[in-house]
Each structure stands twice: as C-alpha cells, then as structure tokens.
Amino acid sequence: MSIGFRIDATSKQVRAGRLHTAHGEIETPVFMPVGTAATVKGVSQDILEDLGVQILLGNTYHLYLRPGVETVRRLGGLHGFMAWPRAILTDSGGFQVFSLNELRKVSEEGVTFRSHLDGSSHFFSPESSMAAQIGLGADIIMAFDECTEYPADRARTKASMELTLRWAERSKRYFEEHKGEVPWSFQELVPSTQYPEKSTASAQGIARASDRVLGTGYSAQSLFGIVQGGMDLELRKESALRTVEIGFPGYAIGGLSVGEPRECTREMIEATLEHLPADKPRYVMGVGTPEEIALYAALGVDMMDCVLPTRAARHGLLFTSEGKISIKQARYAQDAGPLDPKCGCRVCQRYSRAYLRHLYASNEVLAQVLNTLHNLSFYLDTMRRVRHSIRLGEVPYSF
Ligand SMILES: [Zn+2]
Image 1 (cartoon, rainbow, N blue to C red):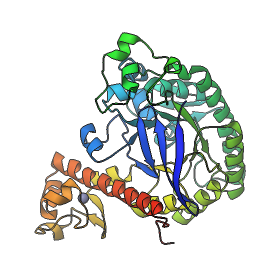
Image 2 (image 1 turned 90 degrees about the horizontal axis):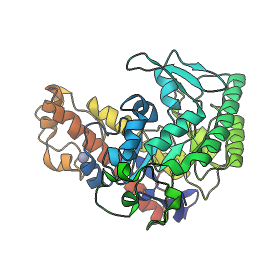
Image 3 (image 1 turned 45 degrees about the vertical axis):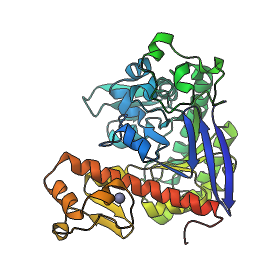
C-alpha cells in the first residue's frame, strides 16, 4: 500500500486528518518546509524534528544537478542521504525548469534546459522525472507537468493543460512499471525514532519495497497528479476532472503564485477543490503567507509548501502575531523585547529584537539560522492552531 489518508474531523468544507506513509504519519492540514537541496537552509534535521516537522519537500531539479540522483540512490535515497527518518515529498523538477531556465525548449517528448550551475544541457521527460524521483526515494512524488506562465491566453493555456494531461498519463505509466525500485532498506522502514542505517541500502541493493511486509503497512511511494489550467475556471475544472480520471492517490493544484492577484489564486483553488475527490489528499503547491495558508486550509486544502518563511528569514523578514517585521530596521537596535511576545519558539524565548537586529546587521551566520527557526515555527504553529480549531468544530479562518 502506498499511502493512507484518514479524515478525523470536518467542519463544512474544512477537514483535519492524517496521512500515513512508510516514513511516518503526517497530521493535516500540513505546511511542508522546503529543503531544496536536501537541506532546509540553516536548520539541521534534529532541530526540524524538534519543531515537529513531519514532512519535508525536496527539489528534484536541484538534486538531479547536484549531487546527482545516482549518488543519492546509492546512499539509501534522500532519507538515508540526509539522515531524515520522516516523510519527504519531491516535486517533479518541472517548476524549476520553467522558472530558472530562460533557454528551455519544450516539446511533446519533454523539456531541454541548461543547468543554472554550469550551463550544461539536460533533458527532463515524464519518464526521466519519474526515474529521478524514484531514485531519490521520497514518500510522495509528483507527476511531470508544465507550469503555464502568467498571463497566458486561452489557446495557450488549453494547449499547456493538454500537454500536462498527456505527461500525467506517461508519468503514471512509468511509475507503475518502476515503483518497486525505490532505494529504501528494510531497516529504514521499520517504525523507529532512530536515524536510518546509512550502510544498509548499499549492502542490500535496491529494495523491492513491494516484496516487504512492514510494520507501517505503507511500503511504497505514491505518485500525485497535478491540476493545471492557468487562471481559467473552465480549464481548471476540465484539468481536475481529467486528472482524476487518470487516477492518483492524491492531487495537487499547480500553476499558482506565478504573478496573479491573490484573489485570483483563491478563486482558482476554490473552483478546483470542488472537482477533486473529498477522500484524497489535496495539495496546493508553492503558497503562501501565514494568513493565506490558514485561509486555504479553511477552504479544504490538506497540504501546502512555500519557500516564503525560509527565504524571507534570510532577508530579515519575520512573520509575527503582530504582522511582518523587518529586523534590519534601526528602530529595533535598542529593543530588549522578544521578536514575537506570543511566540513560544526557542528564538523568541531566548533572544531580544536588538540582538537579532545586530546579528542581521553584522551579516552573522546565526542571523539566518535564528530567523529561519522563528519563521518556520510561526508557520508550523499557524497550522497547529488551524488543525486544533478544525478538531473543535470551528472554521479556522474568518472570511
Ligand atoms: Zn518565535
């Protein structure tokens, strides 16, 4: 069995539930921190565990270029390589190819692109993206799609949506034929709080996960489909219905946060959710601010990811219960108070705004570490509160 999803509480369209994977349980709605290159920049894995992170996101594009899929696969997949025993999701690489490469060339077969590291030429297809994601070994992997640019006219949006649908079928076909090649070792899959043994994967060769009887009952990767359709409500509906027809254990809404107004993002999410099966996890990719993730959870979204808390932290932008703070401002130079008096994180419990401002102004490495820790805690706490209110039967957002 690849993945389990159980909804324990609902209130109108909102739901709180649990996703079961071979690498543990995830309480939903969940915010997934982004660990682009097998690291959440500035935060070590033991601290991520302490913060209560149950699932991390890795970027196939970056990991494919460096250190390379084969290296990660030989070291036990991402779980073994980065010593992260909990769940992981990888994207297909498609979004980075589209956002980082001006010289990309899209054909029916796939996308030719140049590495942003050294300019070398590479090719991603639905099949090669699946092969890369199977080699990386995340618990949840994503179909290879084309993220439609914004703005785009209807003909272009429709053609792009059709291409994504054909690629979804090819992704599924390749995945079904190769999913047993996931590089997990037996020891890693036994539920445990211990770090996985790094040597077992190479000692045992590629694990045939499907042959295993495991304590968790969830022994394989899951492939999620992605809905596109630009900012066109009819195309979103068509993309959702036809992606569901192909059939996946979970569905993502892609192609958002590409420059459209926020009201439009919300409208697209609401309209798409209507056409996705209620008993499957629903994932909105690449959104948003703390208010937005609470809002989208209230619309019935189960999973979200965003680079915003970690990227903003590195630029000294901090999310607090009193709004956004730019810690570089001189007004904090003498401020002995905590960053956010309502935040229980280890940064707010220990350090003053003045100290955080000093670290940032002095370009100290610790500034990035502490700012990231706070922002991540703030996002994770936001989702914890959202889940709590859903379980109490409340709608966790005032519309
Ligand atoms: Zn804090």
